[in-house]
Image 1 (cartoon, rainbow, N blue to C red):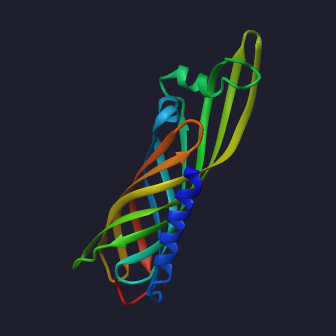
Image 2 (cartoon, helix red, strand yellow):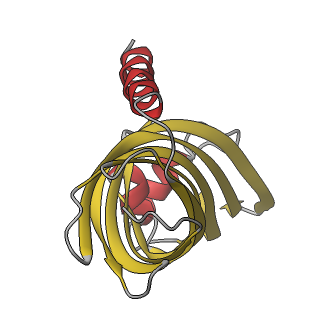
Image 3 (cartoon, helix red, strand yellow):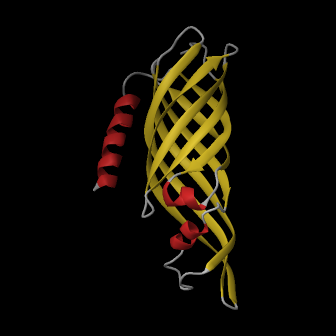
Length: 206
């Protein structure tokens, strides 16, 4: 039920924004920064570098829709018990795990509400995300060992904010902080702290 309500509310918000007025322009950009996980995933894996690309569709000076892809790869954290608990339902029972890597592809659609100033533009954002997790791991139980991987999709909702700063007519740099709550059995989330750079294919500005 929580998933349905989150999808319905976010979808209504995005639809309302997208039908407000005609589009004013498009920006494309890249981002790089740091991603850390919360909940059981945060106990099991260290934070690491995150990077990706995005495209922004400007509806009016205050509202934009942004689609993005973010990639990150995490190593095993110090809390081995948390990682073992995550895999406790596997056929091996409660194995000792080593050489574990978590790779994540995050696909987001966010709406930004922007507050244009002379050069800088702070903004708030909200939206939805679909996250593809892939875990490569080696499990050892007694004399038995196995190398395998697990992969799955999860749905999440995003909130956050950021700041763009115009350095040229069509070029902006900035920074953004986003928290994504992931609806899964591990009650986890993601924090992304990224710097951004973009180029705008429009002359009207924001």
